Length: 409
Image 1: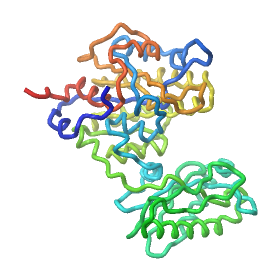
Image 2: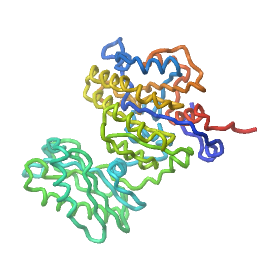
Image 3: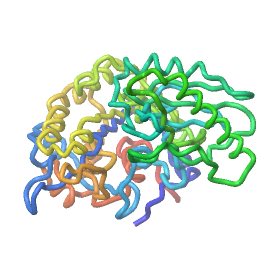
Image 4: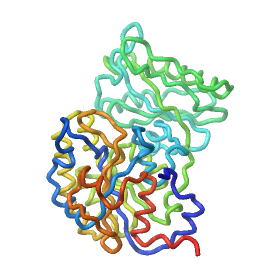
């Protein structure tokens, strides 16, 4: 099985424009497992009349996000869904966070994700997330951080969501090859920023950030919970090839969470504003912009969240929410609809797993249907698409949309 995408030069040669529209609907963490030795998965337990109709009229399969046995993070898993080699383009979490809040990145920038944290009077971590303070409580604290200046570099700090923020350094002679300060446990002090490479740039950047952290503790000292900061995921501009140029598509992203907005923005999609984050709201946003784009990436987060909570039934109910709203999307008459997840998040495991992910491809003008009629892991395992690498989903969608020519004489 080939796990790398089509070479860019081959893909460019095959592209042909037309007026078809493609939807990639991602139910985050869709794949699951039975809670016991036997039984249904969350998707199989859910009542999904509309998804089952698409399954009966389309073709099913499973995809492997990265490689067999490798549990993926959300960033590389989405890159693979977009047809990018996730091992070639390794996006740091800082870059995803920065792009997710609209903080532009340039080559040479250094960005990192930040958490507000609670420290005791000895400087030890008591709570890595500062009691999960709300976005409203965190916003004025971010304003304090944004006032901290460093010599010869521009510092920008932006709120992300709840207790999270992002910091960007811009200037000459910086390096993102740095060690995280988050110790990932309580009872010990945060780590200092240390270089991961022996270079003047990495040493200088570490010194600057350690100075910034010291100042951050000073300006936050009076807050009862968020009196410290933890930094991780140091990164820079990954300089990804443009999705629109790569596939000849005008692409829009409809997603609530900053990370998924970020990865979409990094590949060059237009990230649309959302007024309603329910499945109905996601699909109505697509309807509002339907004439302007020919590719829609629509992301629904709750399936993953409920899986990480270990709540089997809540994850099934989240899937049912999407199913009930699906007619709003289908009334737009897309030519190709792909429904899948970026990875599996079984409630039984409470975390991402390496299990293959259910995949549904609906394309009435071009799909060769199989004999499956129910969207679930068992049916998908026996579906006509087989088990494929995630990086092959985009070429399949393009082909079913009539956007790929024959290769060779």
